[in-house]
Image (tube, rainbow, N blue to C red):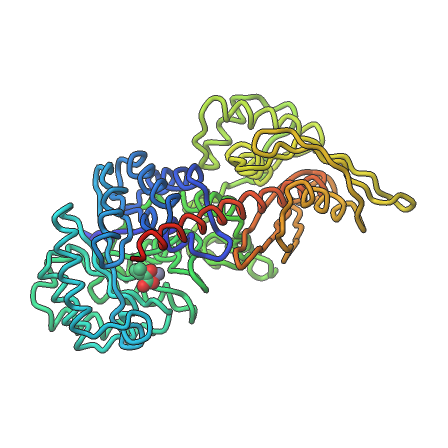
Length: 517
Ligand code: KIV
Ligand code: ZN
C-alpha cells in the first residue's frame, strides 16, 4: 500500500507573497475551493495578524472549505496565535502554524534573541496554540542554515510542547538534496518521539532545487510537502505542487507514495492561479507550461506519432490539458458550451454561465473559431474577475496616420460614472494616460506586454501590465480582440490590485502601530 504524502498548499500565503501577486478575498475563496476540489490536504489560507484583509480571507476560507484542513500562520507569540486561531476556528479542521527563526544569522540580526530565548518562545507558543486546537504545526524558519545540534533541540522542544507537524523549511533556497537528506536523517535519529509527528518540507527555489529537495525529503521521512501552484512565491518561488505530484505519480516505480490530488485538475488550477495573480507561466515550465507537451523537432514528432511513449513520459490529459484545443463557433449551443466549461475545470453558477455564454457568442461573431484559450480568457477576465474600485464601461479611440491619438474613456469609480478625454503618442498611450488621469494614480508603468492568445489576425490579444507605486507593485491582465481595449482592461486590473495592496499595507501598518507599546 503506497504511503500517503500530505499536500500542504501555501499558494494563498507564501505564494501570495510574490511581488505583485495580490488576490482579493473573493479570488482567494475561489482558489481555495479549487484546491479543495483538487484534493489538497491542507490549505494555508494566510497570515491573519499581517492585515485585516488577510484575517478576513482566512476566516472566509475556513467557513467555505469543508474537506481540507485550513491553516493560519502565526509568529511564535500569543497575539499572533490568538489572531490565527480566531481566523481558522470556523474551519471543520483548523490548524495553527507557528514559526520562529532558528539559524544564528536570523536569531542575531533579525530577532536579537539567544538560543535559550528562542527555545523558550517555541515551548510557550506551541503549548499556547495547543490549548486552542490539537492540530499545531511548528516551523523552524531557516532550518537548513541552522546548527544541526540546535535544530534537534528545537524540534524536541516543539514536539514536547505538543506540535503534531514539524516543518523543516529551506527558507532561502540554499540547501541541496544530499544535505537535506542528512538533516532529516539526523533529526529522525537523534530526536526521540519525532516519529509521532508528521515531518514536513517547505522549499524555496532560489537555486532551482525546490522540487528535487522536496522529493529527497520525502525519501528521507517527510510526509508533508508544502508547495504552491505554478511554484509561485517569495523571490524565485516555492516548490511547485504540480511537479511533486506528477513526479510521484510518473515514477511510481521509484516512489511507493500517493497523494490525494486529482491530477486532471492541475492544468485548470494552474490557469486559474495565473489569471488571478497576473503571473504568467513560463512556456517551458514543467507540467503546466505551454510547451510542456509540444514536440517541435521532426524526429520527436515522428516518434510521438508512432508511439506516444517515445517522447512523452505522461499524457497531457493526465494533467487536465484538453485533448483538442479547437472548440466552437457561433452556431454552438448553450449545452455544448456548458460542457466545455466543465471540461476546462470551471464550476460556474447559472448566472456566471449565462454571462460567459453571452460573451462567447459576442466573440464568436467577431472570430470564426473560438478556442479553449479564448473561453478561459472570457471566464477569467470577464466572469470571475471582481472589480475593486475601477471598472471600464466605454472606450473610444481615434488614431491613424494623420490623427492625434485621442481616447474618450468612461469608467465607474467606486460605483460612480466618470468620463474624460486625453491625447497620447499612440492609441494605447492615450487610453492609459486618460485612465491614469481619471483615477489620479501616481503609479509608474514598469512593463507592458501583449501576446496573442491563439493564432490568426482575429486572435484575442492578452495584455499584461506591471505597475508600481511607493515600492508596492501589481500585475494586471486583460483580453480582447481589440488590443487597445485589452490594454485598458489590463491597466485597470493592475490599478485595482494596486489599490488592494495599498489598503492591505495601510491595515498592516495600523496593526503594527497598535501593537507597539
Ligand atoms: O520559508 C519559510 O521559512 C516560511 C515559513 C514561515 C514556513 O515560509
Ligand atoms: Zn516560505
